[in-house]
Length: 278
Image 1: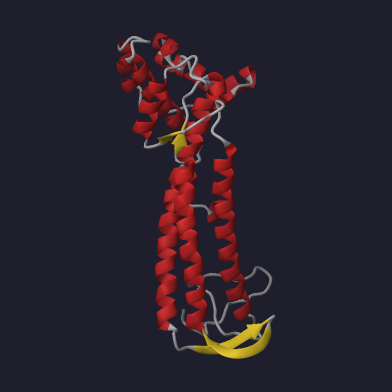
Image 2: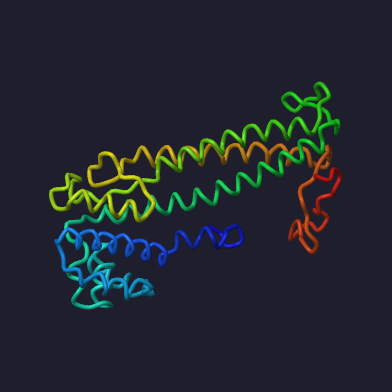
């Protein structure tokens, strides 16, 4: 993603540092559960707690991965180098997907939380425009051809109802992806107690995956990204409408143009004229 179009609050969720922090948190909670079950010494928890604010050296982890050809093993090797001998108790009974998929769910859910708040903000603005321009007359068009008169407020009301449906869809999709799995190799709990999964998921604010094959079923991801695609198509529909209405030969509306903003490196006249204050 181009930095200019990225928000730090979103990119931070998907940074390597945040990913490793989540991995470590999953491992730490798993160790707490394992210690309560008597599988590993309880003393290991003190070591993990003392290192819970560890700064992960992504360069070093990448160097290890070049040799191991395995991301989770590279991560665990780095942990071993950092906290010492107690690291041998980490990851017992677990498989890589327990970490990877559970982390991915957390990242998707946190991202969805941001997008849900964004949609709420967008809905408020569109609703205000709908009421403000309830009686602002404009020409209606069918296939781009002049049709019956309508109002700009009605166009905004149409966008509002569509986005409101999208908000419901995203809330549903975010709940569907809010699951974790700590079920061990092939997902049958032969190497780890299901109580570990319950404990870790509760600590992370996740639901337990009903049935896993050591990975979280991908239909959950498909539903989530399909929802994002629907929302993107709705945004595109509104954006194309605005782009169409601000064409030179139409010039019914305009998008915001800030002081000092430039429209083109080759055509300085491309400053959008402000016709309808929306």
